[in-house]
Image (cartoon, rainbow, N blue to C red; front, top):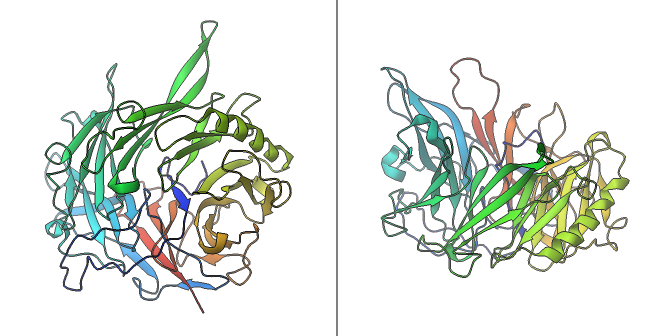
Length: 471
């Protein structure tokens, strides 16, 4: 994993250019009404348009303070924000934040995870969930079983909150998923009284929620099992379990077996990035330990929950193109996948910078692009999202330096008008937990969870950045 990412907090992006209408669900008075929205796809985000030709990036001055919003959700007297656990942004720029809050005024200490909403202008929505925030239930009496809180946004713009339940001993894990209404109240008509509990290998930071097509929700859980050869353990095999819920909160019919599928990764390797298309096809990539997978692998699960064996074979062969790079620690870190265009893989090549590798939809190398399908970049790439006209917005992932925002053209070159060295994030430091996501028409957002070393009691220091493209 690249250093600027929080483990398993992946960005799932699909290249598509819809027309985005102004979001009328939120008025200045905080009045709410539900409106069908365009397809939204992911953890932190949504499918939206960013990038406008060769315009220069600059902070969106209508957002926060000079383009930066500090995330400091309210809390009762005696409480504090320990950290921001997760962030998800809707297609029109509204952001849902999960804050871990605690109080030690009495013994034992109290703590919880609360969901808050920030509007598209970076200000806190004061009436969401009664201004206290929606409390994600712990889902377990034993504190050792209480897992990580999760957040996403579905294609109608509604927040989806969840919690993993850690397995203990020989038991299996689980995840509990809930959908909230626009005012932050639990949607009791979704699932069974507003909640869905699903058994799955859901542990730690290896689980995420994704917004899929037609108000569906994906639970994606990755796990690792040890392999044995000749009586001894020789390696680990990663797998990804997908569970699809329909718009009513029940297992989706026609997807895998009873709404779920498990895809095993080849070569005793770990999953390092993933992607989802507007139609719901899902990709998982990483590097293996065997000769066939040491350059990387890419596995495709179709929108119907079937593993595409031919694609996996083609991709294994195409990724061998990376063997020609002389840098150290060559690996793919992000994928941008469209409906019918190429599959774009971005990554790092250590000291020589980064790269973009392009595959066809069937997994074969797009040799007619770049230099036999490969284009070098001056900076290592940590994360990437879609842009217009074939462009890509990306975050750099240099060692000992804050990330910078880049625009990569359809030819795999940095847009010089956007900035030869990229746009600096105001006030950003060398931390972890940076993410990039579309944030409405002509805008791109960056979230900073503020993850840093803390030896005492520290307040959360998370931020949202918003950039626009224009003169």
